[in-house]
Image (cartoon, rainbow, N blue to C red; front, side, top):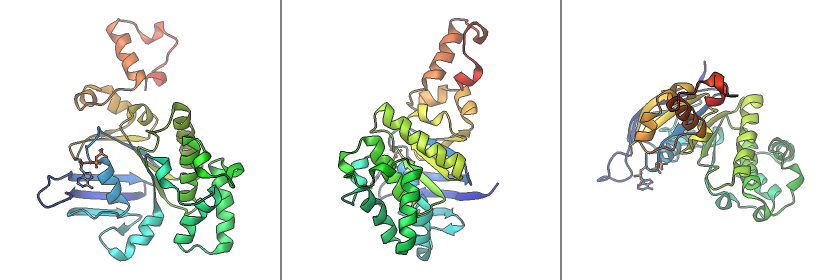
Length: 269
Ligand code: ADP
């Protein structure tokens, strides 16, 4: 399996007298994988994301993205192109007056030739199903549509990895579903590697793998089924369990077996 991200022994602090915000973090991400990084607020998830696109360079350890070391400043543009980030607040991510201008802006910034831009613009808006909105003003769109435009802007740069940094947390349930569906298509059908940083465990249920962070450390790692088999740790660090897990536990407590319900093991992770 090709490793597209390799983080080895990474520790980071923001200022000299501050505590380590990341503490000896080691992880790798496979090409085409959907990895969720979960943990409550302040556990270091966003700081880790910033290390992955070279926005910050850790004081200890190394980060390699697509084989490029983030420590080497000459790699920074390549890394920024390889790793697209979608943030929490869709309103803070727009620079263009129309959807078309907005998606084009990132490409201009990356020096993509004009004739390629036209094709990529159409293609990326089509992939996020926003082609009909090319002339719309971004602020008129719903939260989910705005995030899809942000994703189109990133897809246009042909990244290998997209990091969703709490990208659905300001959206209503419909908006959340739109984003997850869009990303799932890009992941499954186009081989895009997805790293989803979230405190919403419901969203992590469908990942290939989950990494649990607490106080700057990776405290658990495994498939959703492995992680949710012992939900006590997740509760101990203050995370709200997915509904399916709560239901499974309730059924157990009431002595009801799955055969007595219309549910299958798959329904309960
Ligand atoms: P998470 O994404 O899990 O909520 P963060 O990476 O944002 O966690 O934050 C981890 C810790 O780093 C927190 O204690 C936070 O206060 C601190 N922190 C985050 N950003 C900065 C910053 N720019 N300067 C100083 N401390 C920061």
